[in-house]
Length: 472
Image (tube, rainbow, N blue to C red; front, side, top):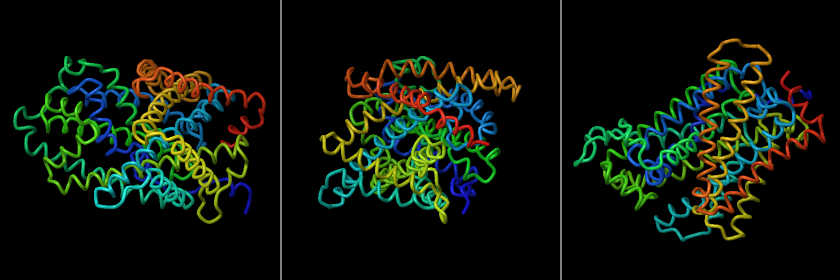
């Protein structure tokens, strides 16, 4: 087998399969059951569904430049490849390290929540209570096994899990619509009223909404395994944004309508963790409430499996670039998967979660909350860097002179992302339990990851230039 074959991934993924993996990473049921009540309680109440539409618009503007540049960056490294093309080797490697930190954070957050949710599920059926980290290790092992195999297998597993979790939420949405909303107020109209949308803390609401989209940009990571990358990646990116944005907006509106605006806000403040399960029981019966519990666990697993695949491909691309050990940049001779990168990612995830368990951190209020906050900030930093790189590259290269695709839309997206980043920084203590010290520590670690990449580019220039050489 030649060296070239050793360092390439293969697949026949179409837009639908990639959308499945990207939407699975967004964990739709987890967002509806977890983020929607919190966004209402801490954000702008009955106007919160509008924040998903606002987030989708900001990210769609970003995506215009992102997909326009995709054909000029034929590399599975995604964000860091774009940043290196536009801003140079140092910022490119800085973005690569920031991406690793960000996706590791979001995966660790969900693994913590998954261990807790799995234990609660089995206890509810009479099983003995076990440490949350045992369930987490089981999930890590399964994700590692699937990640070792060809990407098509993960795509099929994610497809089944995703259809199941979306189906139960759509059934709830339909039940609320057919009943006409709550008995006292009918359908919620707050999402269409400016005074309701801007009430409370809409900035915090927008922050929670953007967090629900984390992972949509990973379409470009699967470039080497797409059937026709230049057409598949743009279609998958826009489709993922449309599906996620519409699903979240409608489902959040349906949950509010199911209670009535005042009662929904009160319930979100009193019982955010069980609000959606209770709503499902009210409209679809107690059996459906149990189904939601089961599907919440499968939703969390689908999320970590998707991010496992994304992280493995980052390790693979960095191995190909000689930034990380070159062995990580080799694919399996039969499965054509980044098998060594997958094994490395599995070991790293297990070590991180065992560290959290050894220090006695709570899997939800600390592991999930803290790492989710770090991931939200990290993804905004990454997209901001990428937006700047896209604008600079098109201005310098003149490879595409379409004004909307290469200047106006990316510029508007840059403004929206910058405002969102400022809002997130201001509210970071809220995401990490009110600790200003912890918030500043997370900020510093993310910045240091960028600095580490820049320093590596200076100390080992051959590693960073390989990123561009591998795109040829």
